[in-house]
Length: 363
Image (cartoon, rainbow, N blue to C red; front, side, top):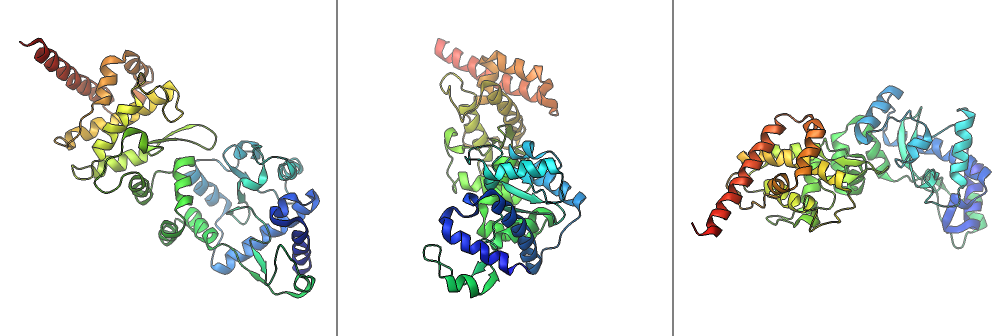
């Protein structure tokens, strides 16, 4: 049914070159993308993908992306997501989508072609929904297109396998899909963690830790990058509390998880010697320091004897009075027994200061 349109697409693709559908006339972009959306769904079904209901899809996206997909596309675009609007969709939203396809710069927040596209009704997510990434024309050469091949060459589905497994993971919680992604598409899992704060999977949490900490080696504070905190696609601060809970559960003297928090806090909270740290503001550093310090305090009793003790958290509590004030002002972030943990770490640091003072006095 769509063969003529697909061949016309390849004919135009030969004319515009590597930039593909993004530089075609806007009417063609809309027409070809509408078709690509249908073809992608057909290809996914052939691979075994089964759609979930709209309600289930919304719940799944909330779980993995921490976003309500029913929000308007202007908001979603700020989070590197868009919801596809079909021909029969709201006319205003359809027009906005059209404009987002033809904007001049990919740096524009609304730009369609560098977003993950959620497709309602069919309930799948895809990036760059184009015909050539879904249906291949056998023998087609972008640089030297043969008219005979464009007219008669064999057409067949050739969609990236990763799209199938990504959707299986997001919408079906598939363990087999997670295993495949771990082996073949870790960047997708990494983006879920860093840009959307998905830190509920022990497997992904361990993957992120292992990428930072090599066996038996402890990175310095600056080398942890965005393991503990990151910035969301829209710029919000994400504190990876699920990862911290995972580390607390599994911390022991051998894996040095306690030392990792200790080392990171010694840089994060050292505002005097580290005035610039991971593009975080003072408030963001204090908020991150509070959460990480909380889990550091919980690990302390569990990891006594671990060969590291910078006490960056205790130092900040003792010398940076505005740090404690910030935590109190935010009601201890409603973390259980945090006030007691702070007092314990403060007293521990104060004891060390008094011992050192006594030693230096020569008494």
